Amino acid sequence: GLRDYRPPLTGFESHVSGMDHFRNKMFSMEKERFDKKLKSIKPMIDNKPPRTAHMKHLQVNRKKKEMDFQRFSLIERENYRLLDSMSRIMVRGAADSVFGVHNNANCPALTGSKSRENKARKTVQENQVCYRVL
Image 1: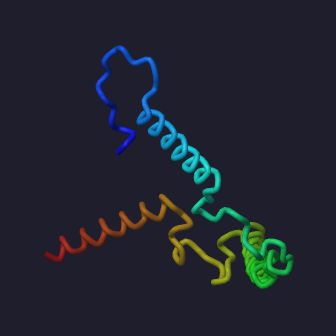
Image 2: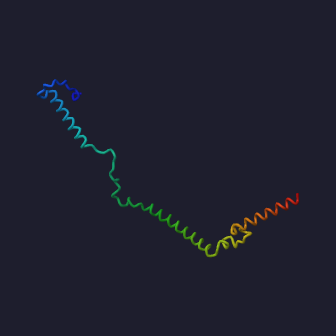
Image 3: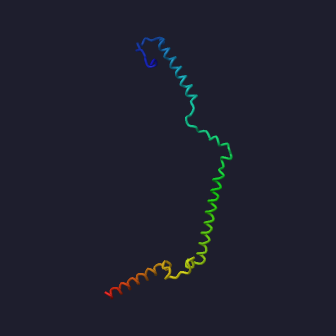
C-alpha cells in the first residue's frame, strides 16, 4: 500500500515531501483507529458468574443434601451392625459363630498346619491301602 512505497533517497532531502506527509497522516489515523478498536474489544469468553448466583434457594441443593444424608445414615447403620457382629465374634470366639460350635473335623481351617499334616497322613495311608490291593 501507500505505507510501503518509499522513493529512493538522494541524500539532499531537506524537507518532508507531500507524499511522506500524507503517508504519515494516514498511518497515524490507522493506528488511532486500531487503538480505539483494541480498547473497545470485549472478551469472547464469558467469565461472569451465572445468573442464579444470587438466588439462595438455588445455591443450596436440598434434594442432594437429603439423598446424601440418607445414604450416609444407611452406611452408618451397616457399620454399626458389622461392628456389633465383629465384637460378638471377638467375645465368643470364631468357633462359636452363627453356624454353631466348630470342632476341628468340622472346620479344619481353625487348626492350620495340624490339619494339613493330618490330611497328608490320610493321603499316605490311602495310597498304602491301594498299593496293598494291587
